[in-house]
Each structure stands twice: as C-alpha cells, then as structure tokens.
Image (tube, rainbow, N blue to C red):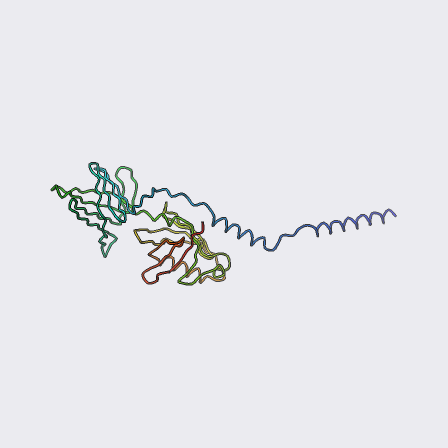
Length: 274
C-alpha cells in the first residue's frame, strides 16, 4: 500500500511538471528578426555629432602670419582682413590649372587688384603647427599705391553643412531600391560627419567607412573600406559601392542627397532619415 501511495505521488508530480512546461511561454521565432530590426532602427536614429565649425556662408577659409591675415571666399564676395585693413570685393570664377589642383582667383576693381592662388599642397601654420590641405598665396595691391603686398598661409574648403546627416539609399542608377534588393536586411545607409570629413554606414551586406574629398561643388567618397562578410546576393552591394566611388558632384534638395558624375545625372539618390 505504501509503495502504491509513493508511485501515485510520483505520477502526479510528473504530470505537474509537464503541465508547467506547457504553460511556459516559448520564444517566438521572430525574436531574432525583431532584435535585428530594433538594432537597425536605433542605429538610424542615433544622434548626430554637432557641427563644430561656425557656419557663416563661406566655402573657403585661409589664415597666415607675419603679418597676420585672414581670407574668406563666399559665393558672392571675397573678404581679406589684414592688420591694417579689411578688403571686400565681388567674387569671380576661379581659373583652374589643367595638370594640377590649383585654382586662381583674379579680381580687378577700380580700387583693388587681388590675385588668390589656392594649391592642393599640405601646409603647416608656422605658429600653431596646424596642418591644412591647401597652400594659399595672395597678391594684393591698392590701385592708389604702388606697392604690392604678398601674403602666404594655409587654408581649407568648408564642407557643406547640409551633408552632415544620416542618409538612406532610395535610388541606384535611376531605379528605386528596397531592402529585398540587398538580402532583405536593409538598404545601404551612411552617416556623413563634416567635422572630420568621414563617412560610415551599411553597404547592403557589409559595414563601410571612408573619407570625403570636398571642394566647392565637388564631393568624392575616397579610401573606402568595408568588412568582408559574404551574403547570398552581393551584386547590388558591389554596384552601389562602385557608384558611390564614381560620384563627383552633389546636390541637396527636399531632404534628398543627389550624387552624380559627368555622365549620369542621378547616379545615387539618398533620403535624409535622422
């Protein structure tokens, strides 16, 4: 009788364990997918680093010492400040060398003769030690005087602040894209940081990063590096990366970033997503 009682207790205990196991909620099959989507959503909505440079409308700035001077070039004017004077003149289209990255602004008014030569050659400020990508030489003459003053220093182009954002691909060579074109995970997207002229993001299968080369109206994505993950369909990612590195021109309009080159007007179209 005692044995029967023990067996009955064990049997009911076993049934209780089975019932409890049935009642425990199982992890949905979509959990992994949901977590992935959440991570991607959080990545897209990450806060952008604030723009460090002061935005005043100029697209090129240069400074020099001995004597101290400062130069700003805007779309509609050129401003040169020296220890003795401030000169403002209308701007002009630069004359560009054919065999090297050198631009010369030659400005002539009734009161001023001004030549500005900007050469893509690394330059170090003699006092601060700061390194800039451009060497600047300025020849300035007040037409009422005989002496021509020459200023030498360093400068850099100011990357368009509108690029400082997070962008998701909408079109590739004129065709609308979706995440299904890129293995169903997500469309390519990138964050552009103009503080250090860098970009990083997702290229369709792999993570990517690289540098920006910027001059007025010129934008190139250079030194592109990416992880080496393998995905079932790599053709679209390869096509995207090729187009990105082939682009040389840009336009920002209606929360869209349009990248193009000499032969294709809409090589890539991105939408602002932050």
